[in-house]
Length: 85
Image (cartoon, one colour):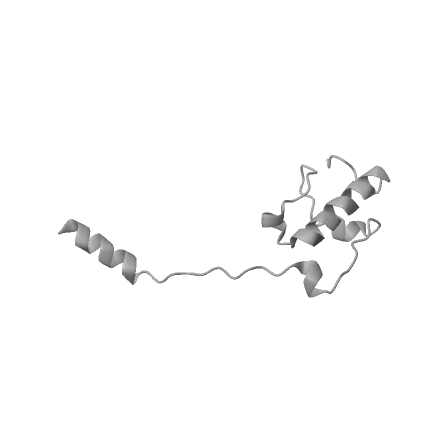
């Protein structure tokens, strides 16, 4: 009898579907992410200085690869610090 009430509860709770987040760069039709655009790159680097993963940044796979490459180039050119203070 207790089992039947728990199954009723699970069926009455509405299923919440998550909307897929659109890629920020696809929405703006960006073909190339420039390493000199430090302001944009800093949006994808948290306080610890690591590059945000795709699941947190909401960027598609091709743009995530371009973004990582641009951040690494900007770090190499000393436009972005490796570790933020």
